[in-house]
Amino acid sequence: MRKIFSFLFICFFTVAHSQELNCKVIVNYDKITNTNNQIFKSLETSLNEFVNKTAWTEKTYKPNERINCSMFITLNSYDSNNFEATIQVQSSRPVYNSSFTTPVLNINDNDFNFQYVEFQNLFYSPNSYESNLISTIAFYSYIILGADAETFDLDSGVDYFQSAQQILNLAAPTGGAGWSQTNKTNNRYYLVNDFLSTTFKPIREVMFQYHFNGLDMMHKDLKTSKEAILSSFNSLSALHEIRPNAYLTRIFFDAKADEIVSIFTAGPSVPLDGLVDELSRISPTNSSKWANIK
Image (cartoon, rainbow, N blue to C red; front, side, top):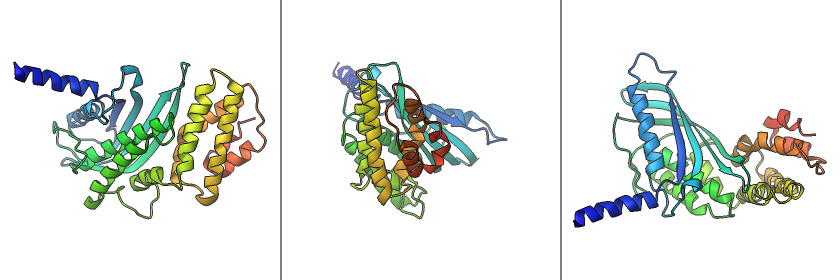
């Protein structure tokens, strides 16, 4: 009887303290030919279960509070359980008192190489390195949690970013691509270190003001909310002065550029003097999009 009770308690605890993420993991293997595709399908199934059933935090999430996100993995090569791949990580969150969702993250990582044996158990341990596959997926799970939290309450994502940094510290000694400080400034090392850096705190301030004081308040006063979003760009402009073309700035606009254009091409109108020029200076790769703001 006690064993049954213990089993039920464990099951209850797992359900109550898991499922923070509602994540769809897709494994694209179109580039792989002349092999049995079953291992790729098994990998996709295993990763979906791993991400969505792991208890990443000690908090209880209601079904409607789970964070909608996706991880799109493109396999470039496969040989003897060795995979070379890229991963695109996206997340979104609902806009308060509306039927709309807003993108929060859009990250492309081209350094995702790993080993996987079909049907192997995927288990995350915060205090040890298991594999590059587990570490990378766990790392981005915490990045998603941290970025989402910052859009609701400034600095509330720090603990999640620190968990991601702990994963990085355990993975870096393996020498795997993406985990160490290199001449590339757009890898996992810089991503989490910049999120935790005081220099780049303006990015988190923008995330909070843009979402919480901007989008979430649109149901009350659309014009004031648009002005709050406009004001948030001042922090990005100040950051650009000391860190032009920063990785986190690029990530922000990769997620938000289309939405920003949509916000400021719809009514009610607010003064937009200099906005297009400012956005073009901060994010020149999106200049063709900014030109649509009138």
